[in-house]
View (tube, rainbow, N blue to C red):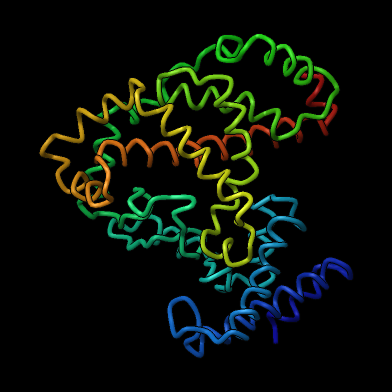
Length: 328
């Protein structure tokens, strides 16, 4: 059909990969059409193995063939499927701008304990994280107002600390020579700059050198969290790296717990206008303020540190590729 024929347009070598990916997407689409999958009946053992092998094809493309460039990956997914919805992990990808816009702007958008179409895991995130609360629900509305009251609506105006002051002197000197020299900067090098700046900006407290060193592993293992249960099924999240993710989350949560920002949370969460979100957090079996701090710590790591480090690393790497940029 036209969709499969589209795979031939990607060249003789890359086209083979794209056609294989299209075939695997077709396998999963057929399973879903028969009511088998996460949102339907339980798959058989063979169907589960087939589904996992199929999902790996898409994930391998996202991580490998596109060199972790999500713009390249998802644009390729869209072009390979002529802009029509296509399987990705445990749910469909939607590409048309109008469809995406309507979904994102929906003030009553339904949400689940899910990211990137897959069910999440408590190895990575607590189910009470605001990301999983449906838009317009009392819990979602109240936690957003609470965060604004704690200063999150003004974070973009906040002055970041001078980087020399945010880092230990020895670390700054080491990174400075690499940053302004000819050495290749790795994601971990950039993370050493981003981590203390983001943590200090969010929590109004300077992290220790030990905490920064420990948290750097999140740059490697935290990325896998986007695929939650699917990553566990495929052993991408496994007995080796899962304890590392949990240890980092606990350490950053402990660091944040006595910060100036956390003190604001502790005061605000007891106000009557936040009663529903307080009850939601209390149902987790811990003090509501503790759950709130832990959730914001997770969001700081995943959305703040990972996203900023990825953007800054690629900015530096792409700039160094172009000699005209280096002359600026």
